[in-house]
Image (cartoon, rainbow, N blue to C red; front, top):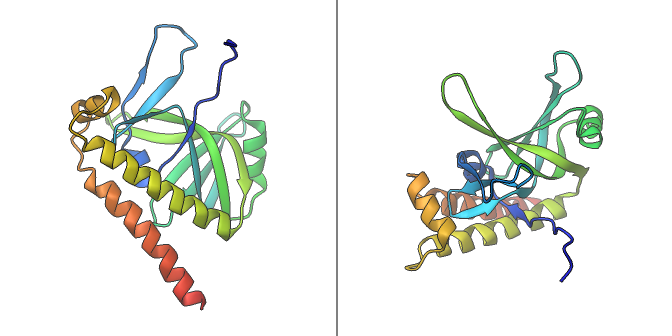
Amino acid sequence: MSSTPTREIARRVFAAEFNDAAYTFKESDDDRAPVYVLLPTGQRANRIFVVGTLTETEDVGEDSEYWQGRIVDPNGDTFFTYAGQYQPDAASMLRELDAPEYVAVVGKPRTYETDEGEVNVSIRPESISTVDEATRDRWVVEAAERTVERIQAFEDDSPDEYVQMAHEEYDLPVENYRRAAVSALESLQESETSAN
């Protein structure tokens, strides 16, 4: 067995569920151990993959460039992504893109607690690229399938440790995420119908 570290799977998740994923944890005390967010459907995520419409970019940095991007999924829910000097490629994409534009983002989930005690969830991008509508549509189908699979595992009689953790940490109806998946798929059918 090689000891080469493998990259975590980038989870496909809709914004409604991602924005509810406020609980983070590590699986070891090592300083470099990955930080995971716990999805409310009971899966850990160290990386995520989202595709949506970039609707707005803004340099929110005070001393240096720090770009914020708003990416909207088919349900109208928003992912926020932030890139600065440590993500130069992603920051330059956010600087140069003209919204609206379909984009694919792979990145790390990050949580931030506000002064009011609310937890905001965002993406620290590893990569941002423009994609076409067909790519966005394929992502929607895949994200819906993964969401339904997570919900089925969440409702299983013998849940794994992450599902048990989600039951303990969140008091959120997973039915909301099933509805988000169905709604996203319906939006694809509606756009196909209106295109014909």
